[in-house]
Image (tube, rainbow, N blue to C red):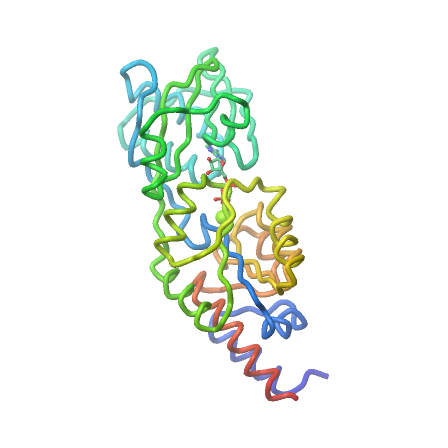
Length: 290
Ligand code: ADP
Ligand code: MG
């Protein structure tokens, strides 16, 4: 039988925008030490717009953008949507791409007009021993912008900077967790400079940057190995293993089905402030029972 206080809190939480899928995990929420939050799509809206284009070769922004949009046209990634939207805004003709394939968490490759197209993170190029040395790159990342590089037949042609919108509720969400004595940590596949800028804006003291999708759950394990009880909040397919690994997995309601199905609690309103509400509610509920 379900204890009455728990039943009451569960229905109360439904009206508050929390969907509790796992009651045992909800009970554990009262003892959490740290909350790890994914950046893109969780702390930010995950809707990117192109803010800057830096040419690394040639002099035709629109030509480079059209190549990039051709490859990204096949991708569901928010960066891809931003690049394609910019090409359409400029009324560019987007050529057809073939042999498109994703490098998960790092970029995309395709063939366009007989050329090999790569659109990848600066981190990916650095790991390949071909770092981008352009001055502008660090400046853009320090502004919190996500930067990707376009290469044609192996030659770097352009950088695209994309700006995302930090959710207006994120700052309050972090402040509230901190007030409750919970350590907020940001987790992202994005570059260090971007993570630094966004975490500073939100008041987050610790972050993990350039984390590849298959390493996200390892970061949760790292914190657990420090003796911390950890919640993970995420929205993406990439976040699912980390949501499962965490002591409490929390999905953004507007996130992917895979994330929602991997989570213990779903934030129905996609409001990160509701994470603190889970902790408060869990503490209030299980305090009454003992
Ligand atoms: P996050 O962890 O912030 O949600 P992802 O793991 O989805 O981010 O992506 C990490 C990085 O991989 C992005 O910041 C970007 O540099 C690169 N990337 C992933 N997919 C694409 C794509 N379709 N086009 C360009 N870059 C991409
Ligand atoms: Mg995300």
